Amino acid sequence: MEEMEEELKCPVCGSFYREPIILPCSHNICQACARNILVQTPESESPQSRRASGSGVSDYDYLDLDKMSLYSEADSGYGSYGGFASAPTTPCQKSPNGVRVFPPAMPPPATHLSPALAPVPRNSCITCPQCHRSLILDDRGLRGFPKNRVLEGVIDRYQQSKAAALKCQLCEKAPKEATVMCEQCDVFYCDPCRLRCHPPRGPLAKHRLVPPAQGRVSRRLSPRKVSTCTDHELENHSMYCVQCKMPVCYQCLEEGKHSSHEVKALGAMWKLHKVVRDQISHCTVKLRQTTGLMEYCLEVIKENDPSGFLQISDALIRRVHLTEDQWGKGTLTPRMTTDFDLSLDNSPLLQSIHQLDFVQMKTSSPVPATPILQLEECCTHNNSATLSWKQPPLSTVPAEGYILELDDGNGGQFREVYVGKETMCTVDGLHFNSTYNARIKAFNKTGVSQYSKTLVLQTSEVAWFAFDPGSAHSDIIFSNDNLTVTCSSYDDRVVLGKTGFSKGVHYWELTVDRYDNHPDPAFGVARANVMKDVMLGKDDKAWAITEGGITKGATIGVLLDLNRKNLTFFINDDQQGPIAFENVEGLFFPAVSLNRNVQVTLHTGLPVPDCYSSRASIA
Image (cartoon, rainbow, N blue to C red; front, side, top):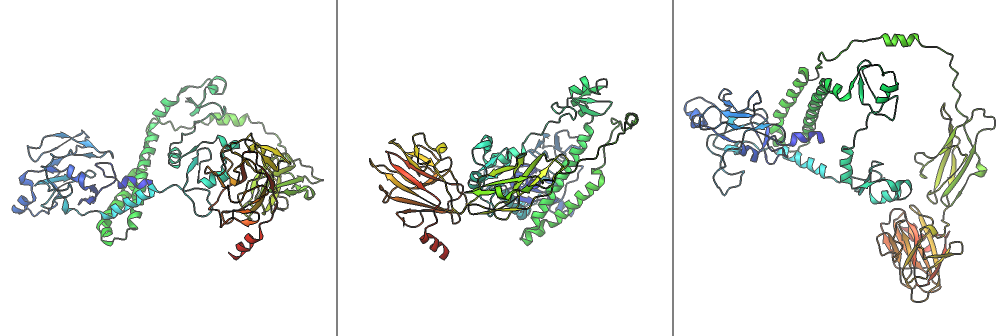
């Protein structure tokens, strides 16, 4: 669509057409711009005087080119009207599109009408800024030219498509509006996909995220790679060897085969062979213009206004025929000059052939044998899977490494999760209650082996986990193998669970062991980057329950249903109202916030409450 933009811009003002009118020469122009380039003609050239003299010309009669020479073929930058003496010679201007236009006429007298309806001076003449054909207006003035409604519709659709929001490239179903773009990954993300696929930790923490609009511009303006020497990969081309006719670096001149050759500056040789660049530029501009015209024609074909379409169809057909003729009349004819030396010197090649020494090459070694998965050592724990493999006992071809592949847990495509020399690998971060397929292959310098037999792995139906000391506030005190936590600070302190969830249904409970000094603990889920020194749920990174029967000895249940995207709370096996939170998407960690010496213990690996399971099955 971008190639069509020049077709939608006025040749006078350089902006998108506003209220375009169609001139008899089939070109378009803004109504306001047409008024600005009007020129008043002498009385003898008016249509009324011509009709009175019996010349029989039409209302929109083209002026004799001998009398009207507004544009100089020599591109002098000046234009004059030779039919009367009262019109002074004035310099012409250039529009933003590079088209020369005649200066505006004298400003009309003050009027209360709008510029589009204001009367046009008698005996006015207008010159098309594209084909330079001139015509005299009749009594209707600019109102006698038809308005191009089709062109206005195409411009509206084009501007709407340009203003359309950028969409996330990783959403599986209906793409959401992108909020950031990673300059290193060159991918647009919405907030849920960014948290799931591009977490702000590990190696990805160094990536630069920018707004989508800035990312679209940076894609266009990304710098070109500098050409490097093929013999010295760390050096850029800086000179041109005249004898070998190829770019070289300074090391080639000091220690390579070009040390005794004639060389010239790379920039000077580029300018010397500029004719090739000019030819390519000429063809590129012509191709861009033709592509723009084709896209504009396709948009016009979509128009459902019969009268508007028929009004411009003949003009478009003539433009397409004219463009076709221009391509056939030498647009792609090479513009070669005598600056090129096309002689072929094969003496260096013959010398190299005579110096060749032919030796018997060793036969390449075969690829390694297919690895064997050791089923007795393969296992799963929670949402992690450990796999072990070995080479066949009678294999004689060594393997340099192995490639382990897993699918997505839904029978999708396989992806590489490990490449290396080890024969055992543990894959973390899998989905709970999911079935994965795994396979392994070996490789060496010759190639890769066949895949092993596929191993089916089932992750745990329920999650077993403890609190994570690494993500907790420093005031949190851990005990009971990190299942019990407390805090003596009067301020709220947050601690997360070790396991995060992004799929499935998960339930865990927390019992209140100590509840003194009127504390206000909170229980729920949070993002990995939640604030650790405020009550859980006070920022937009956490969802929690803070009151409603929480006392010493109480049991708080947290039910996270990521299949239905909701969060529900229980206190002493009683559900606290309806669903607490909806539209919950992304990666979540179990979380609590504590203060004033309150102590809680975590219980995991629990099944979903029967009351919720029965309602879910009915729904």
